[in-house]
Length: 278
Image 1 (tube, rainbow, N blue to C red):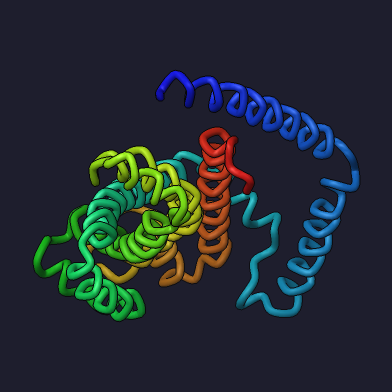
Image 2 (cartoon, one colour):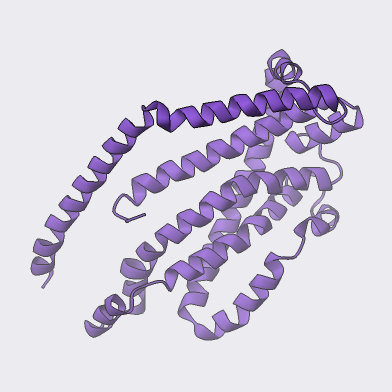
């Protein structure tokens, strides 16, 4: 039986790999065309002019781009150090939230009673403003990295839980019936069917929570009193001293870092899910 399946699956896998390779080549060729990158460049130019106009008319809100660039180039080590602090908090919190959410998603997908009990509560908690509990986390965990990591994990937990739980149950009924016909165990169905079927949902959630983890870490730094490092602390201190260019410089670094994380996840998704139609 396995030999027959291998003879059928191997050519299909080779065809899928060849199709994915051809699709990547077409995508790279398309990226070199001006029609692909020129609209983005023109939009950046328009936004730059609009920003400078806003800086002239509303200097209390916008800082000139030259001043922002000067702040970044005058002391890059300062921003690099604080960026690494925020990035560490975001990634550690994201890792904890992902492991916990994935494990719970497996449980709720396999046990109907747990799913009916947990998912309504998860939906309610997902719309709860978690920033309100940041002072309580400081009281419980102190002024160190703990409150930031916990708050970031909570911010990332619910999008991952809902997406992964949906993906684990998004298995076509005919395919699931085939596994049941051959008396596959629950573990075999989970390992060979449900987890691979959930991967598009997993990466969809990661595209959301990777940038969201940065937001969670910064919000935690802003909300948790006693933060001494991190981009949130940079924004807080610069705002209190009316250094608008520094505030915007930290915000631009956050935006660039969030975009980089999103790009990394997208690239990993293309590598892992080259077989998927998306």
